[in-house]
Image 1 (cartoon, rainbow, N blue to C red):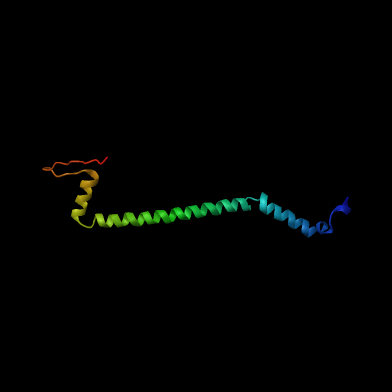
Image 2 (image 1 turned 90 degrees about the vertical axis):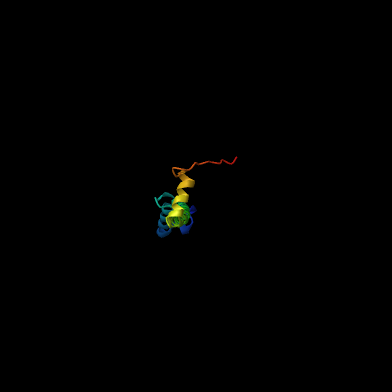
Amino acid sequence: MLNRIPPFFKNFYVVAGLIFLTWMFFLDSNDFVSRFKLSAKLRSLENEKEYYQEKIKEVEHDREELFGDRESVEKFAREKYLMKKDNEDVFVVVEE
């Protein structure tokens, strides 16, 4: 039965190397499937990070624009929170 095994596989280093590669590719906690999933998740999170950084820049720009002067604060309060002065009436127009 030992005669049927190719001489290449009788070498200790080849057998040890194959066992090591099998272990690293399929059985280890850091195998290639896990590494692929983690790298895909990393790319996804980096894309989300870029998206939220852009949103932060937009919000900061809006904040600077809003608190720049008193008129813009008053305009924001009137439009967003429907605030009014004592002697005014507010009419809300809803588009259908």
